[in-house]
Length: 198
Image (cartoon, rainbow, N blue to C red; front, top):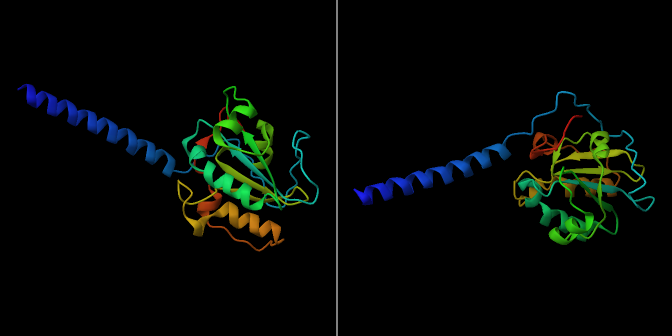
């Protein structure tokens, strides 16, 4: 009898753990719900960058909207750091911290190995049309929206064919306005912004 109770208990524990992982996976496979008051921001629109962003003129900018408490954001840190390493000669990078918790820029840089400026600016998310993390926003050297979307189709950012942020960076550097992205690139997946009331 005792053996059966242990087996049933272990089976229930396994089902709970499996259910948790299944639910967690399902949540991040579904698109992030669009806020009711969402205002679409179109490619080509001018995005006013705050004075807190130090940037070089005549260089495009990648704004990385990041929440350290979002699993999806943590999954793509390695890809983001690779983009910084490969493109920092041609593009300015800024991490836009989107969290209701009190993290300092120094904490984020140290914890995630980030070497670029980290700012907190919820208004910037609204002006770029961002309502989830992680999201990449690529601006032209004239601060016009070139791309807003996902980094990759794969949750772990391992699919090179759908490395959307890299494709956008190559396009903005080459001044290509003919790039077409599929729905997976442009539909937000990830964590809803904290206090998201766009």
